[in-house]
Each structure stands twice: as C-alpha cells, then as structure tokens.
Amino acid sequence: MKKRTLVLSGSIVTTLLAAATTVTGVFMTNRIMYIKKKDDAFIREREITAKRFDEAWYDGCSKEILTINSPNGYTISGIYLKPLETKNTVIICHGVTENKINSMRYARMFERLGFNAVVYDHRRHGESQGKTTSYGHYEKFDLQAVVEKVRELTGEDALLGIHGESMGAATTLLYAGTLADNADFYISDCAFSNFPQLLKRIFESVVPIDAKYTLPFADFFMRIRDGYSVKEIMPIDAVKQIERPVLFIHSEPDDFIPSSMTEELFEQKPEPKMLKIFDKGEHAKSFNENQGDYEQTVAKFLHDYVPAYRNETETLL
Image (cartoon, rainbow, N blue to C red):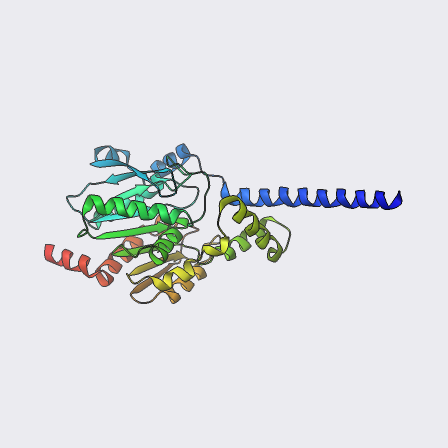
C-alpha cells in the first residue's frame, strides 16, 4: 500500500511539473510571438503631432494601394507612394510594434533624395494578416514578395533600395543574405545581430532566472508552436553573404539593441559598406534626433557607394 502511494505521489509530482513546464513555456513564447503592438491610432497621432507625417502631403500624393500575397499564406498591406516621376524606389520596413505610418518619415526623406517609396505593414501589424511575429524569420519571405511586386511595377532597370528599422532592419539583412540579394542597396538602422543574444538580454531583464536556462526552454517551445528555432534568426551570419552596399546606422544611447550589435554587423559585412553611429537617439530614434545629419549620411552613402545613383544625379546637374 505504501509503495502504491509513493508511485501515485510520484506520478502526481511528474504531472504537476509537466503542467508547470508547459504553462511557463507557453507564457514565455507568447511574449515573443504575440508581443504587444502599439495602437494604430496612437502611431498616427504621434507622427502627426511630431510633424513626421504630413496628412496634406499624403492626401495629395499620387499613390497605389498594394495587396501582396505572402508565400506564408496571407496578404500584406502596402502603399506605393509616387510623388516623383521616377522608377527609382525604396522599400521601407518598420520595426516591431509599429506600422507603415511610422515609415512615412523616411518616405519624405527619400523623396528629397529622388526616390518614390513603398511602405508596408509586417505580418500581424497594421492592416497585414499573419498570426505571429517572428522577428525576421517569416518576415523575410514577405519582404521577398514585396520586392518581386515592386520589380514588377518598376521594371528591372529601376534603382531599388531597402531601408529597415530595428526588426525591419534585421528582416532586410536576412532577406539579402539568405534569400536574394536583389536590391541595389540596403540601409540597416539599429538592427540586432544575433536574436538569441537579444532574447537573453530581454529575459534577464524580466525573468529572475539565468538566461542559459530560459533561452533553450523558450527555443524548444518556439520550434513546437511557431515552426522555427530562434537560432535561425542570425543577421550576423546573413551579412557575410551580401554583396551589394549596406549603410549601417545606430545611436550610441540605444539601450534596447546596443550599438555594438551594428558594429558587429559592419565588421562581418564584406565591402562595400558604410557605418554611422549617432551620439543622440534612443532605440529607433536616430532619425528623430538627427534628421539633418541622418539625411546627409544617406545622401553621402548613395553618392559614394551606389554608382547608378551617383551617375544619375550627376547627369541631372
């Protein structure tokens, strides 16, 4: 009888431990997969108040609404902004928790530099479909579909660039380094270099457990729940394969994704490449805090590292 009681007790403990493990794993991966997004109305109001989104300009701008089929099985919502009579276009990828309205500030900058722009919502953001956020893993395939659509609209001879911010920058590098280096240039603003390392930083700030235990645990449940390993999201490896020019941007005060990650990316990327670390700006605020210098940096990069742009602008002078 005593032996039977011990067996039953052991089974109960095992069951409770398994249940606790599952609950913890689901909780941790929920924080990653379903990260809380900013409200769309909040983003719009914030950008209008800061005078980074000009509604009058937007309303009067020639534009085309894009609905793009993702190879992942949902639709991506975008807008092709065409204020200029040119085929030259930049695709702008926003960061996690944001939407395409956040990308409008960059669209205006690129307009001044001679480009039209495509802004779009990442999966599970804004008006795009998709159930989870994957920090570049599935998003890179969506970007590939956007690139193919833009090439279809503009032609292969158009000058095409991709600008990404934060998760959008990581997505840009993953696309170019693992799928297709099919743009003429890339701009990576405050990308992370190594997703497991970033998660380690985040976990250590919110969970009082050594990340060497929590990270493998989260990775195990991520593979089960969303079909990939966090170890696959490695822009630091992807940049080694990118042949086209990349401008790396970051701000020193960034305490979410440290600027050292961008410096690591820059070191691993073969030439041609350019690096700019600003003295002011928290995470994803390099442009907000250094607008004039930011635009001058992009202009210099285009002139010095993108021959087709330099030749075209010199012809116009």
